[in-house]
Image (tube, rainbow, N blue to C red):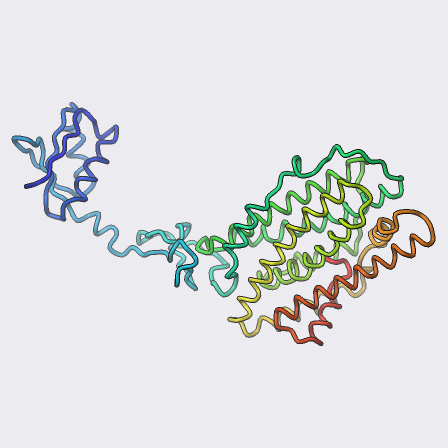
Length: 398
């Protein structure tokens, strides 16, 4: 006996089709369902809807007003559809190596109707951007987000000598231009990532948000007691330009995250230890935590790609060497930033304090180089090569 549904006075213009479609799914193609309803417009709307959906309609007597015979149009529509991987990245084969351009913007794991327009994404190969830890790092990033208004006590009471406050402003100015680069570089690549690699796309997006927040807090600290920023030098801009010009995602990630932001983590921890006021120390602590996560993604991505790209290590080394050559005639870290760091570490204008501050900055530079060398070793560079490349990194830190 064919099933019959009563839609009462509900019209197709108010959702009756949902009840009819549900009933049709309960029968096979070629079988029928009965529909009974009292809506005055049903006699006009139902035949039109059935024609559009590929079903046949005949009048009925008795319990039903119409018989609808299920057509095959819908089945044909999905005949060549494809499953775009699996949503859960932990499932075997969930993230495919080369997602199709015709999967477009579909969610990973969705069934994609055939015949869709191709979307051209430059970063559409798993080997070129994936990281096994991507999902974990994204969840970690979500839980670690912070609001500058709540996380930092901007009302903390302090007064610094003019020279010390000027040094803080100069360091903040330097940090802002470097964070501008760290924001814009992943932003440039984000739109090139195939959405199939959802976790990488999300990580880049949240990294951009992190950097935007860093620019905000460094700016607010610089202007907390002053009305003007410090100096931006030719050498600093030239260093960032060589970073900004890198067009390959893996190499850019290497230069920015593994070498640059890795170096900046040490700088921010230095400021956390030696900054003369509580606001700057709070800012340094929070931003260092974010930057360490950016470094972790850069390392995870490169470790994955190095397993599949035998020439990548050569390209990474060449990028460091090319950058060193391009910056050979520049002054490196500007004098104002170096002197400001010495002064912050010294804490006062006395010969003994300045000497101690100078030694602390030199120790910081050595710590930075050691950190770069360690990360290079973890990427598979041999000890001598890791040491050489670590010391070729830009003197501007980023």
